[in-house]
Amino acid sequence: MGHGKEKMECIFSCHQFNINMEKKESKTSKHFWFSMIKSFLRFVGFFVLAYQDFVGAAVLLSAAEILGIVEEL
Image (cartoon, rainbow, N blue to C red; front, side, top):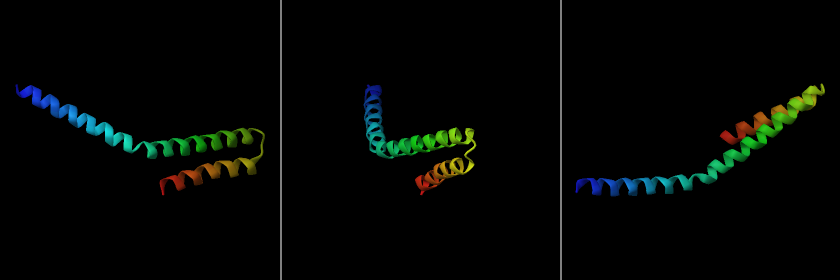
């Protein structure tokens, strides 16, 4: 009979954990979009670098790094 009570506590704890995870989704979504924008800037920056536009590449790659710093603040 003791196993039923333990199982019920586990189900309650797991349900409570899922609720906590859902609350953090907005932060995860924010991180996802920051990462997508940073990746896009880096991709375009390296593409521009292939055409030897060093200033344009430097601006785009620097913008990606600055965005990463802003995200951490």
